[in-house]
Image 1: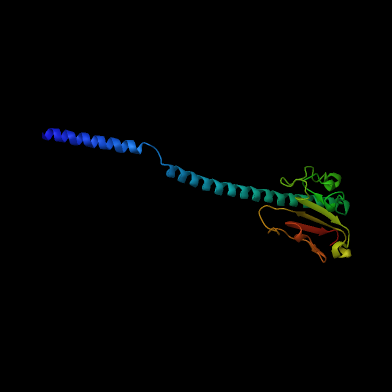
Image 2: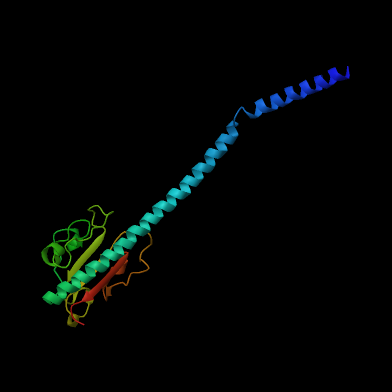
Length: 190
């Protein structure tokens, strides 16, 4: 009898453990699956947002490098010709814009800048890179300093106006920093 009781107990325990194992092998509950999907969604959103921000910072860094290259080409042109190149007066209020081929680069800076930079994001709506050569005395600037150019970038992605690295440019009756995120300028005479 004792032997039958032991066998019965063993059978009972085996049967019980089999039911426990079967219960745990059924998979995840709906709540567990929804919870995991929610966590994955939140992590994906955070990662994609940070990736987008990083790309914007990268494009802005390239824009600043492009501005330096254009400034160097303008100085080369000035050293060769004694003046800065004229800007195109056909579109965008007379501004040459960098989402198209700059007329002032095509017509004068080709030697110093054979591959002019273009803003990868601007799409022909007068945004992106801008250049304009003003005549002496424009916007209240001193006539004695001669003509001057204004070079800038609109619609930077990683900062509000003005960009932290913008040197700015203004005359008594106009401040171009209010119009662009990054801007600089230079007179033809010191």
